[in-house]
Length: 252
Image (cartoon, rainbow, N blue to C red; front, side):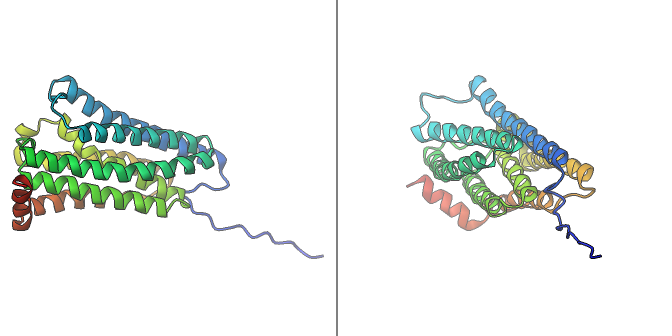
């Protein structure tokens, strides 16, 4: 009598393969978190406009285009997370291609808006031109890097989802800049924003501990990248080459 041995594949615990209920709960959690972050970011920008802090008549076209593209990108992320939760991975991937393409447009428009603000002298008064120039462009590079990493890890759902949440936490910074009383915070504004961003990632870390029994490395990597972004911006803002570059842009 021969015994048939069926080898059980090694599973990545974050993917919840072979455990449909766990996989469904995991996907539903990320769908809710994605929606919550998107709504927070949109609310922060909307209330800024409602309070009359933006003169829409004088805003250049590329600023409006950037706002529209970013809103569309957030909407795509929300839809993608819902499709993933519903098990529609084909359409999730198709929209992912559109999302990456739109992100490249957003990066270009964000740079144009930043340079335009420096040239026109409309940089927020609590920022120096050098700081604003560093802030926008460091965050653009960090966002592209994080999304690129998430795309590269798309076959590992546990990594992919957490890195995508990390990218949304990264762009919480400009939203917080419009929600927090930045003029009153002075030099602490940078670090108060970071605290809120890490607080959002703490929600993800708590989920990791509950589900995995540990904080996932992608969650830790997201926290590290978000923190490094703030540190790098602070360093570049006072670096002589960045100050000189901002002065050249202002007089161009």
